[in-house]
Length: 147
Image (cartoon, rainbow, N blue to C red; front, side, top):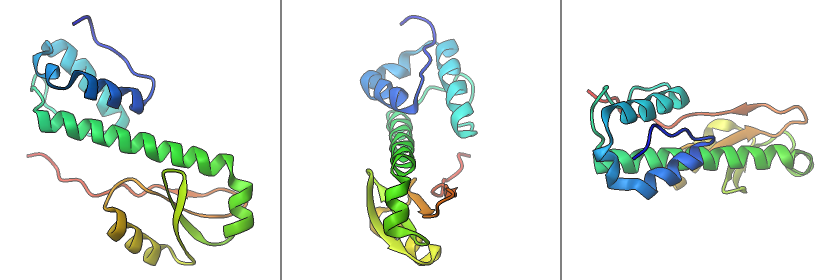
């Protein structure tokens, strides 16, 4: 494998992780450290200690997180690109968007979040109050810290 690789988007990282899969276990420590340090910049966590090799489960989790983040960013872009239509239909209401589709709405955030997380699980889901002036709230799903 050549030197460390950089990725322009989390989606590119997820695709790469799925592509190389198990071969990440064989990366030289310098390459692994560079890849992990790039990941830290995106999510602010220290998922791996320097030189520690990821397991297959770690690789799958990183790919899943990157894909979820890329999907969230696509939903946010969809909302921003179609905001006028959303304002016409849902003005003053909270909406939840998954895969560029409104999956639920409510006048209050808490009942909406409860229903959406129960139905779709705890993951990054775009939930925003539809207003002419945009205001987006990103609530990350709970994470367990590594010990």
